[in-house]
Image (cartoon, rainbow, N blue to C red; front, top):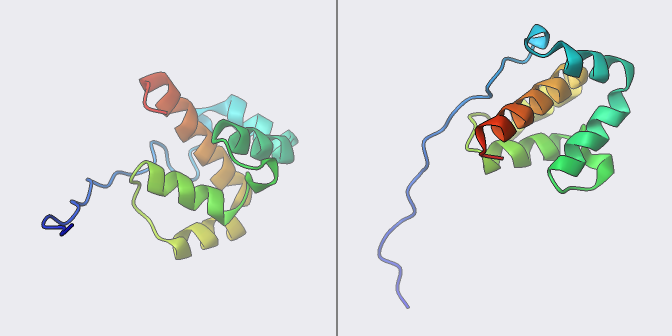
Length: 104
């Protein structure tokens, strides 16, 4: 069977809140600050991944790919390594917003 049409590239979007926009959801920020490991487990669980992957580069990359969010593996690595708490809070805020919109 021959393939005649190339897959089209979906329109890319951005995260629904910035990396340092902790005031957008103070509850998530406090949760991430006082129970960082629990936040990671919660993120992984919501995404159907292994509980120990919640703060990893992989989880951020999977999420970006799933929702066509701009970025690269290199950016995921840098953000997850240098700004782990902020990256996890940003991911959790985005998950919560997508749930509210019915697209998660």
